[in-house]
Length: 386
Ligand SMILES: Nc1ncnc2c1ncn2[C@@H]1O[C@H](COP(=O)(O)OP(=O)(O)OP(=O)(O)O)[C@@H](O)[C@H]1O
Ligand SMILES: [Mg+2]
Image (cartoon, rainbow, N blue to C red):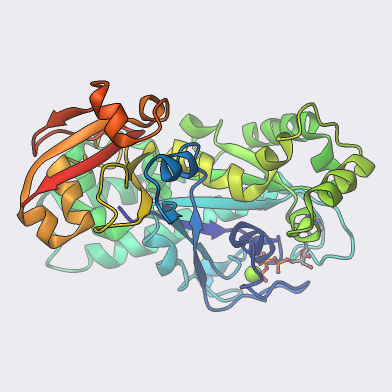
């Protein structure tokens, strides 16, 4: 299951700075002028994982490979983009292919960083983006409705969406049935996608997290185009702080933040606030994704890597992609799928109580399932095949 997340926002709000922080490398050019990014930057980002390292040790693997999500950093979307302002909105095509959108909203004041409208106003900025997305979807839907190949359920659905968009209502606010949604899936409508709202705050505000989160929550309530059901899907980052912390030694990072006023109750809190952990975890929750593992049980002559894979936690309820043991075997190798006989399943937490897969099996915690078994999050899967 390949998951793509798009980073969207006005020009010069810190999208590329944040993208680099997520990738933990300087891939995207980030600079203090609008429309710095033209071509999209794309990179895989590992999904934070509570079990992988330890499972690798139980399996005696030489390496572990985390599941990844692909993040896409695009050009800034400007007010009037639908009329061709800024870079227009042609680049939105890369966002149409994404499973979720991460909307970066400038909340930092720094007067040295140019704001396209001359003043920092997070609510107004977020509304500009919300409206541009509605207008971009409307133009996209109207183009499709002009085609004679658009008929039946697809046409009826798009007509009702167009009617709503014209009134300023995003497509996600319509109660579309599964059948309706399926008929328009290839359109990649932006106002149907799950959104994560990310307020990019000043370094010092980031260090007073509770207060900054409260302010973000209050602002979100004022953004009419924001998805009502996902109003909890927001967070704060300080892209500049992330850039400053970079990969400095842990002690340096801690003292930098403490000097700025941040209080730490526990040492591991530092990892818990870094965007490369926070943001993929939020996307995972937003899209209801879970992780399953392979490695334990596999003979070392066959594989020496323990790997994590993403699946739909709700058994396909949210993405429509339930993963059966047989489907999953196809993700490993065509031959494994062809020769599938059964799957051995165990929970990661339970397996970690043993020194080896064999010991866990002897203790009776490994069960056998057939091809139609729907995988559940945090399961370790060992496929038997001929
Ligand atoms: N939290 C912050 N506080 C202060 N400055 C910041 C913060 N986040 C980013 N910046 C600065 O804002 C400027 C613009 O950043 P960046 O190039 O990442 O924006 P962008 O959204 O990718 O822009 P574009 O749309 O032009 O590609 C950079 O100088 C960056 O250092
Ligand atoms: Mg950029």
